[in-house]
Amino acid sequence: MQPHPRTIRPASPHATLLAAAIATLVAITTALGLPARAQASHGPHVAAWHVPWDAAAGTRTIQGAGQEIDEVSPFALELVGRGRIRRMPGARPNALLGPARRQGMLVIPTIGNEFDPDRVSWVLATPQRRRAHAIALTRLVVRNGWDGIDVDYENLHVSDRRRYVLLLDELARRLHHRGRILSVSVLARTDRFASRGARATDHRAIGRIADQVRVMAYDYHWRGGPPGPVAPRWWVEEVLDYMLGTARIPPRKVYLGVPLYGYHWVQGRPTASVTWRQARTRARRAGVPIRWSARHGSHWFTVQRGGRRHTVWFETHRATRIRARIARERGLGGLAMWRLGGEDPRTFPVAARELQRG
Image (spheres, rainbow, N blue to C red):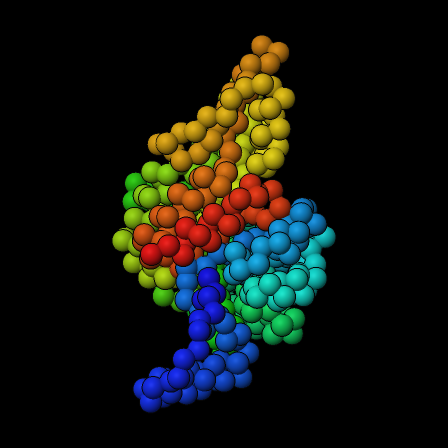
């Protein structure tokens, strides 16, 4: 978070030398194109994704957040066939530059692959294609005045594990030369379990290359499985044990992914994801209490309707406070929130206060 203003006192000779050194560093980083704030401020920070399908609500959150959000990532770009990059339908990342800059936020758009590993495989296949992709992304960042790029390529082939690292290394060198940030979003895993997509991710190597590693520690329970918390507390701890221990990612680079949504299951089969507001509205209309699970660190409720059992697990500011405390205690770089617009309105104030403690 940004430091609070302090009272100015006469400087000692040592302080004057230190100030001169800092001024030189700021001048250098500004000349490279990286905002001085990105170099001078210390974490932990709060990053949040902005999605085109709920753009107006997400923008309202940005405008009201002040210093509670440090970085915004418009979910804006897609990798499509044969290395082509296109803007997602409805995405207008540059429309966020003004509101975000006025609130002192960095703008780091996200590029995804729509979970299609073959699109990424085509890019990774040769050094020439990797280089061309890195150049194309860097040009987009510089041309649009963004502060960096967040790469969210998921469900990759295990055979592409090493080549993906080579691409990220190429991209990092080019972005850093222009004073920009490389964020990489990675699938969560633990020492006990890893999905195929997580096994295709060399977390340790990415931790050496990237400036931020956003660990998507959510969807432990999801729309394709049985009812349960989206990000149980004990599992989040296990994910971080792997990332910081086994993978040896420097804690200051790790951004803990935090869900701001939930799921609604009917007879054990999910119907859809739900926002905080939708979940509370359904509980109120059904006249049932919302319960808290201390073990999982999440809220839930059940409804019997039409002979069928409805179960909803969802996230609130109380759950976010727990994740923020974990991040602070483990010395993480910050939190990465999915997503703006559907959150409990107390989420960001609570996260900011918890991260700043101590």
